Image (cartoon, rainbow, N blue to C red; front, side, top):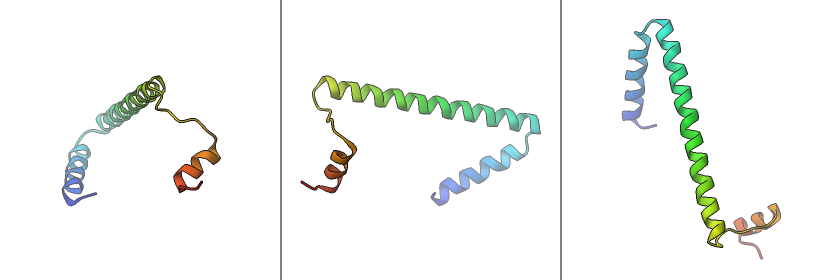
Length: 75
């Protein structure tokens, strides 16, 4: 994390610490929900990209051993 990010994080924490405990709990819940939604959107995007690759014949199939060979550039 860069210094600017650390500084922004520190500033955010200082602001949050000024909130009443109930508001802090609400903020944590909201952030968690947003992170879940972001992850769902990422999964949906990855699924769309994968389905498109399958449709276009660009997807590769194989076993875990095939993947290892491909990653290690072995014949």
